[in-house]
Length: 166
Image (cartoon, rainbow, N blue to C red; front, side, top):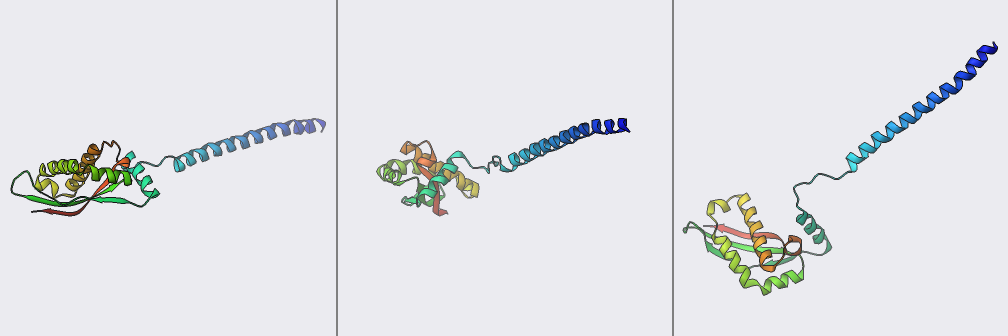
């Protein structure tokens, strides 16, 4: 009996060590799995096709009410020579200083836009993609005249309030 008691006493520390090792291993596995899940769920969300400039523009837009600059109506002959385009453009600008700069540089801006608009064909402007591309080109043209490299600091968005191809 004395030997049985010794064996039981000797096995008890071994089983406690095994139990402790199993508990520690389980805690580590849970920590790794939990950390991985948290990384995946809380990590950087995938881009939804927004450029850095668009994100900055949206952040800036939240800081103050929108500022729009209406340009005079443009009527131009398109490349084919038989079709006319009449378009009314509003520009969403970064701030009052940009709006004032647009007013100061209006002859250059109108010249650039007249050249741009008259270089287009009716069939390319009749689609939504064509209008979107034209919108980007107008913003770039105006920002180039203003000497602005980022849309968030110049013309953020171009809006067509009238768009007639005839």
